[in-house]
Length: 99
Image (cartoon, rainbow, N blue to C red; front, side, top):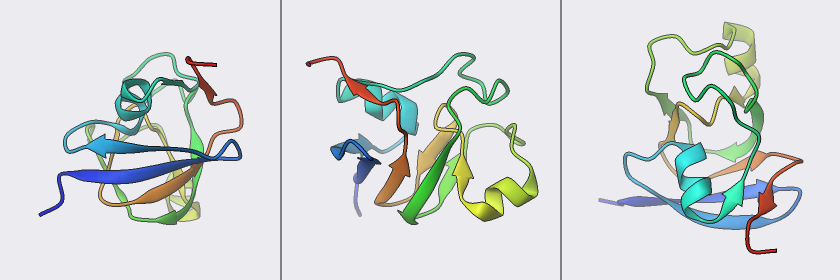
């Protein structure tokens, strides 16, 4: 059983592992990346981003601030989404804290 998943952030090309039980936002922060975020509970939509291939996510909240159409189109809220496998996210404003 895999305990980590590989996450890629485009267009910057950042890659990192997300430990099981960590949200996409938490895993990005663990890897030294900053992505836009605010409420951290799935309602403000500051962190909304698009997926480009890969696995689905599991949400920590019953109904995050996404419409059914947005979910179907591949939009996610990283602050409350746990990856179910390797995936690519499009987050234009992601930056490394190490730069």
